[in-house]
Length: 145
Image 1: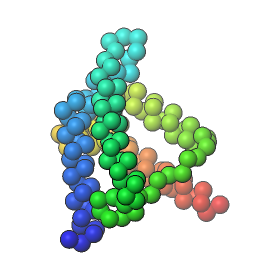
Image 2 (image 1 turned 180 degrees about the horizontal axis):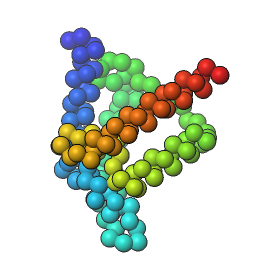
Image 3 (image 1 turned 120 degrees about the vertical axis):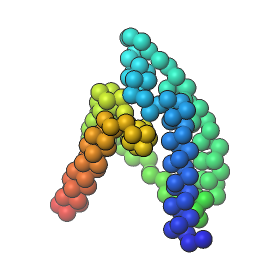
């Protein structure tokens, strides 16, 4: 099988698994996420357990793949180097957290909600893609200077 097609199939399967996990855990539901973020009200800690479970499940194959040096597609793995906390990271973190806290949606669940036909997700995804494009334009102008 062509390596490009193999990579697309692997990506599709991983995305479907991730989406199914979000649906089963109800993490695509903004109300569930907002209840997790509401520490002083109707706090729902289940999102923390889902995150910890996902980290635990992913740790074994991640460790195995780092020792192998390449992914299932055969392509070498590229890991970001440990960097400093800088202004871009802080601004991005604040924007992501504010958006997540206001909407109760982040990119992965937004795609799941869109696939499930939840119409408000369309507005979120359009805004997300707009943010990607703005970042690309900002980054391109930053590189040119």
